[in-house]
Image (cartoon, protein in one colour):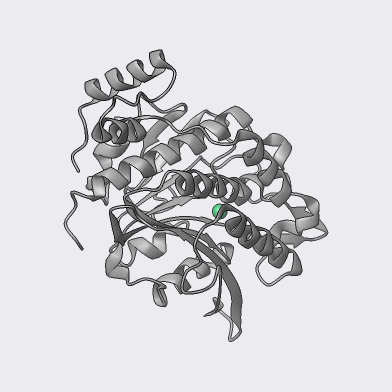
Length: 323
Ligand SMILES: [Zn+2]
């Protein structure tokens, strides 16, 4: 599918806004263009409620291999069932064991997966992901990880609800990864034993720390190594409800975020990615990463921006050659 010229999209959006709803006289193509052009509305109350739930003290920082991590996992699997997402190879829960860094022990974790089958190209898959684990309790302090990454997790639930109601043309596999904080282990386990062939995965979109927005900027990372992503982000910038910028994907060291969250596991397999996140803030990996500090307006805008990106990526991928 071709991307529709922006002027035509804006005209279609204006016409529909004037009419109050999608007119029955629109062609299927016009309705599809409108769906891609619009910045989706999500359930902002549930978005925030889910973030508070995951970052509550009762979740004790959701560290891998803890009962509270299992509690978070059970909540996510129940939500995927409630939303009606399909299980992946028969289950929403995918256990794994991965070697621990600098230790003979292995880490046992469980990824939570669900999918919405594509309406036109069900055999090509977009993996949209967020890690649900955090670092737990240290020296008696609970690290609630509201931004890192209750925010991406709750936003991913909203994206799952949105695309369940508005299926994309490609299959979207929603992946809630475990044990990211121990070295991207859930994502690495996923690509090491992929539930769908890696060759069918067209792209990864990863969410990690999308709520704080202390400076109002959401970063889209990955357009430098994966330039096919750049026009999609560029076209979204003027329409996005938050300030959207590209960067943090060149050079060496801490200012290159390419491998600093789960997208790194996909990038290492040659799978194009875009990672969405905010810059580090004073509460990054501190006990003060609490839900009360989340900027609700920014967070909702970021979630909508990412939903719009996934819809536009879905349209663009139809023109990409198979890997
Ligand atoms: Zn994180």
